[in-house]
Image (cartoon, rainbow, N blue to C red; front, side, top):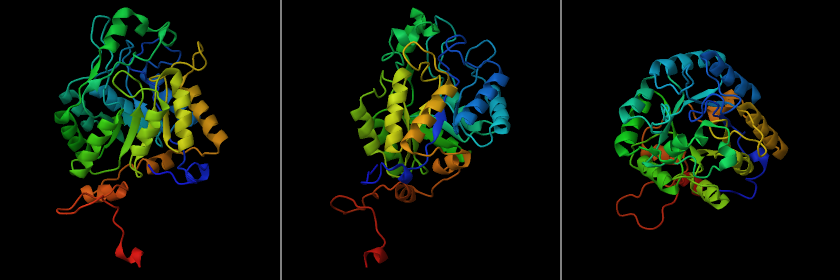
Length: 356
């Protein structure tokens, strides 16, 4: 992304889109004060998040026994009820479905490619499904400390080990097919990226015409194979993201607020919720709703406006698709592909009339 001298002025920045992740698939009831269990509670959580200022909802579904649901029928019912309860929110389904272990002795793992592909067939359909690019370690506890986990189920050594050893399986066989299925069903992929290598893979998908649509993505700074918390890495990722992309910052535990404060100041967007963080000040619980309210307060203190639901859908380019690689590159503000025999660095193409 290119920053002009006036790019940090809030009146020149897009309104802030707050993404809420309040369903925490890695946690069990009791790990936080605001883990919704019944479907009524899960829907009310969405309403509470929307009323607090969130306009994108990252959705997982929980069974009555407290474990994350892996049943597509539950997701269908949840989406149907959310469409009625929060019609202005962008509904974003978590592409892992649920990675939580079934019990203490089980692995924490993402479901099979075939199972994840079923998210493209949900009815009613969501606005987005998150998609991982490239297989990588996902050790979510690597940069968590004892204070982060004290009093939670992940403090159990068996559960800790399960999450320490988790891997995201997301090779080309998965993401090429998944992108086709999402496009065929009018669902926008929301890319979950942690490294420049993953961003470069997405750029190659765009340049080859494998993906033709808006580039909406999260920078995922949770450590353990994903990005860490170094501000320089965050700034470099922001710098490398195309000008026309929509970028959200995602971190973990008490780093969420400072990482998001940087993101708000830079003009990008933020994610909060108990999936990422349970804490405010050290040792003090902080609900998903309070985290949203904190982002609203920080943004308003900087003079940056908060997007409403309709504005979030416009900013996210919900429902937009592009014809081919050339149109996608142009829409994202990226230089065109090199033509045969063309030498030198590529420039964005300018209509001849503009040069007169």
